[in-house]
Every structure is written in C-alpha cells, then in structure tokens.
Image (cartoon, rainbow, N blue to C red; front, top):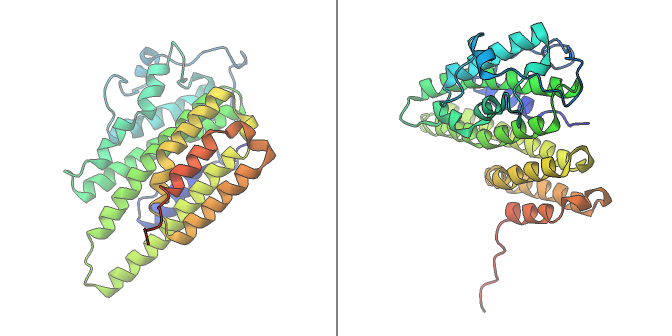
Length: 287
C-alpha cells in the first residue's frame, strides 16, 4: 500500500554516518506497539485527551517542545500503545486530541536543533533526542494505520512534518562539515564521502516521495491535496542540494509519472510541482 518510509532512509542512512543515528529499535515487522485495536471501528474516537496523557508525563501541548519533550512524548506514546493499543494516539481532527497532534507535528519544535546560537555539540545532542522521539511516534502511526486505529490523514500530516524538518536537518549536517578543518586532506576526503552519501540518501528520499504519488488512489482528495502541498513546499529544497545527474534522474521519474494513465487526478498539481523542481526557464541570450 505504501512505499518504504523515507524516514528510515534519512535516519539509518545519513544520520548514522555522523554518529547521530535515531537509536530506535524495530520489531520484526518494522513496527512497534502491541497492535491491539479498540474494536470500535475506524470512526470511533477514543484518542487520549491532554488531561489523560498528562497523567503519564506527556509534555504540555500549549508550548513549543524542546528535544527532551519530543523524546519524552515518544516514550510515553510508545509505552501506552504497547500496553493498551494504538487507538489512543492523538488524531488530526479530533475534538479530544487534535491539539496534541498539532504540537507533535509543529515545525516550531525544530528550534532545538536549528538555533545557531547553540553550539554544534548541543544542537547534535538535541537532534538525537528529537529524532529518538519523533521516529518512535512516526512508527506508531504507521502501525496504527495497519490496524485501522488511525486514518491516512494522520499518516499524510506526519509525513508532511518530516518533509519540512529534514531540510533543516541537512542544513545542520552541512554546517558541521563546513566547520571542519579544510586544511586536513583526510578530513576533506571524509567530508566528500559524507556529502556523496548524503546526496544518495536525499535522492532515495525523493524517489520514495514520487512512489507515493504513483498510487494516488490510496488517498482521498483532501489527503492527496495536502500531500502534494507539502511536496510543493519541500521538493525544491531537496533538488537544490543535489548534483545535476541526480536532479536529471528524478525529473525523469516525475516525467514518467506524468505520462502514467493512473495519475490524471494529480493534475494540475503534478505539472506545478515539475515546474518548481525544474526551476525558471532561462531565455537564450540575445544575439
């Protein structure tokens, strides 16, 4: 139904190279949690309210979370889902829990590792904690989708949140490499290898995003429109980081997608996305 989650590529690939892997273990099926369902059906909302979650040390939703908050939220939700089931997870449009879901996916939470007034050491430390919590939560929602204890809109919003913060993560890695001693040949060689691996990871990330578009029937119209909106916002940021050969490869994938009879519902969004990643057309210089 869904392609391999691109978050696994980002964390296990690039981040591991820098010694800041997300440190989240997976069960044999690639998920975590018990898989127990509430048994009440897709539309029965038993998600936990802020007051209920607060009893288990969930951070308050009415303020920006730091790295410790995100890690704690991941631990709290993982423990509760393991004990009781995925039905309690916060939901996107729930009167009971939408405010918690919004906090989990709020881009303001990334300040803990994007604030350049902090040292690199502190920012990387915060990034590790942030990802420890964030990846745990993402895997819970993937598992909950399989047991029908959540909806695709939560999956889409969770993906959109990651699509927004991953460019910031790559910015931090770039800053780190730029800070190293350029006069050391061994260090320059190491940075070059890391950059090549980062480029490969970004390319694979975009491939999986394109694969999501190849199966538009899996989404309702509103879900699809939000997913495409996130791609419009973030895809150009990924493309500008890549060397020419990777960009050309990905544009070729998008062009094949445009020609597929299964993707008519993608228009005009797909054409607009293609225009953004290709960039403005340069007019030939006057003779």
